[in-house]
Picture 1 (tube, helix red, strand yellow):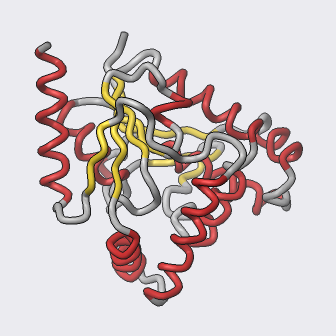
Picture 2 (cartoon, rainbow, N blue to C red; picture 1 turned 90 degrees about the vertical axis):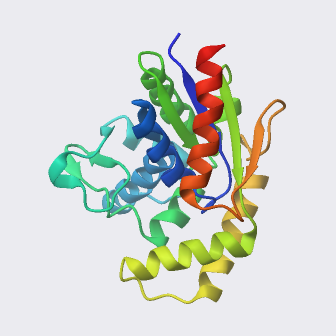
Length: 229
């Protein structure tokens, strides 16, 4: 069985950056499952499908292809992963606050999640992965050898996301970002299907006082120990 590292946690806890760097160090495939829900939201907007219409969302997904891969040399522009929708690069188009809200809405639906979870499991059946999202430890990869819940305080997460958006040229206030994250947390933790939670046996790692490199170092040591056991 390939080695599976499953990482869950709330928005802006550092999951994407940590998972990507960890995968790079270990030579594993990095899988950003949240990108698939963001792409679903983007596709729905393009197709004129309401984010709250579960049946049409599922029908729509059956007609289109979402592909994830590590960035090629000419794609290393700060992205963590390259996302293709029917072959078109949408890696940055899905990284807006609008698509963040959209992904939180479409991910609430059981049948939408069922379609995308199966795609995610197929990836992990054939290769060593570092997979991150909000249902990886208990829904997508419940048998993962290492389960991590990456967390940080609300204020730290809001500051990180605000800084990230400003760096990308998005004009928004810290107050608005804080409110959006609070709303996102509420939806993620109270949705009817697969609410975000800490599973038994998961390693809870608070990244609030740590740099990205420190977090990656800590996890890498745990993985090396696991590989040697």
